[in-house]
Length: 533
Ligand SMILES: *[C@@H]1O[C@H](CO)[C@@H](O)[C@H](O)[C@H]1NC(C)=O
Ligand SMILES: *[C@@H]1O[C@H](CO)[C@@H](O)[C@H](O)[C@H]1NC(C)=O
Ligand SMILES: *[C@@H]1O[C@H](CO)[C@@H](O)[C@H](O)[C@H]1NC(C)=O
Ligand SMILES: *[C@@H]1O[C@H](CO)[C@@H](O)[C@H](O)[C@H]1NC(C)=O
Ligand SMILES: *[C@@H]1O[C@H](CO)[C@@H](O)[C@H](O)[C@H]1NC(C)=O
Ligand SMILES: *[C@@H]1O[C@H](CO)[C@@H](O)[C@H](O)[C@H]1NC(C)=O
Ligand SMILES: *[C@@H]1O[C@H](CO)[C@@H](O)[C@H](O)[C@H]1NC(C)=O
Ligand SMILES: *[C@@H]1O[C@H](CO)[C@@H](O)[C@H](O)[C@H]1NC(C)=O
Image (cartoon, rainbow, N blue to C red; front, side, top):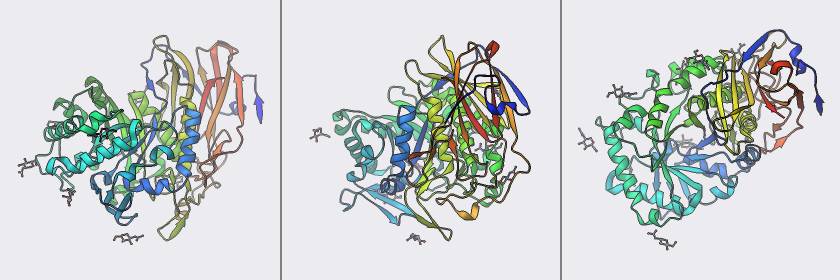
């Protein structure tokens, strides 16, 4: 179905009530918008289960087709420091005591096989070595590095050394002297050993490193597991600077948490649906980005999701989480955190897709794709066409409220030109439909509903585009913030059971009006992409 609306207001919805006027500053600071800005972090003990179904392969294949590049994959997480290389293991990997509760993951070289073939062609991998077992010349980490480099070849872009190393004292893995100085020494020793090893020198493709991998957010004390001096500012001051081999530094962030009763009591879908909260959570990293760039490298959000300790069904797996993730990734990009890796566990409540059916809290959950995955499909369209000099992003001051965020996206180098606009309406609208998804807990299906008609507003954007320029509009839309299904990008959804695209695109096109004005309606709890057609 195609409808061409050549009149102003551009979109049918623009007949609605409140009008938000948005100016686009001529010379705003811009940041790189990478085509591979949205990635995944897979818990090492979940990798084998993921490879047992086609869901992730299909879903990420669809993303690669739209974005033009595959999503990067980090294989890391808590279990990275509980992974033991055992060359005599009779199977590729073995989780002990079992797949659901993992104390130790034993692996041998065959475990690394099949990753390249399973994920879309050209997928970049990051692999986290075990930094906990530091005794006897890092034997374990060296064996892991050798197997990863030999098996993954040019797909292995970066190695990490340890996961959330700022929790090592709390976990009893290091003593009180553990801090940026001791970490930097150990990091140099192990990377030195890798760089001078036969298997590294011999390799046709030599991976570089992602350093730091810190868990604790700089400004939120109740998310700190222990007292230490770890952050990017301090670690680069301590001398962990080497742009030749450090491609990126990584920090982790979970805005909310289910890890303890106090934080669990604060969990809320409303808190996720708030751009001011997203800004507070992300902007605390601005000095960290500066420190990474001063050191000649980049900073990425190497592991994240809506709530730590596996997330919370009813919040993490909703359309609200899709709108949150959309805003979160764009806010991160706009401060220079240019890649964001969403964490996946094969049985975690926050996973965007799960590979296998499982029993959980007395329910039989089906394998499948959850509503928040659609944020990735939408953002794949946002970054599409990122060729030549690439795209850049700038947040819009005129769309910067709790319930509305906006971004201008530019093409080209110094003489950049406005190419796309993205707006996210984060106002909560709770629906009475689309509340169930067979891959999530039915016990958390929402019982809340918003009264009356769903509010809409008209965005009136003053663009530098010439009058008459054709534009296309795509919408990330769903029944409501609380919905777990029925989410699409302009009618195109993802089959819950296969991860394949389904549905037909409802095209919305129009033209730029007088003086460059683009008018577009947006519903409460919706995101729109407006781009030159
Ligand atoms: C896995 O091991 C844990 C701890 O021993 C146990 O509580 C749980 O029942 C086991 N789960 C399965 C599926 O065997
Ligand atoms: C790794 O460290 C853990 C904890 O100290 C220990 O139990 C285990 O035996 C070590 N494994 C190896 C291979 O060094
Ligand atoms: C702490 O660990 C470091 C490194 O393993 C060691 O050199 C130091 O002696 C330890 N300090 C104490 C107080 O045990
Ligand atoms: C170097 O590469 C060759 C050929 O691939 C291989 O046989 C040899 O074992 C490698 N040496 C080391 C130290 O990895
Ligand atoms: C950085 O180091 C200083 C001095 O040791 C310390 O006071 C501060 O807390 C550290 N920052 C972080 C985020 O740990
Ligand atoms: C995110 O922001 C909210 C609201 O200010 C706050 O409650 C929460 O602790 C923040 N989380 C992190 C990790 O910054
Ligand atoms: C958005 O608002 C926050 C304060 O809430 C401010 O710090 C930030 O600079 C604003 N962003 C833009 C693009 O104006
Ligand atoms: C929307 O629904 C969720 C539960 O699904 C509830 O926690 C939240 O308070 C509701 N928000 C509003 C504004 O009604």
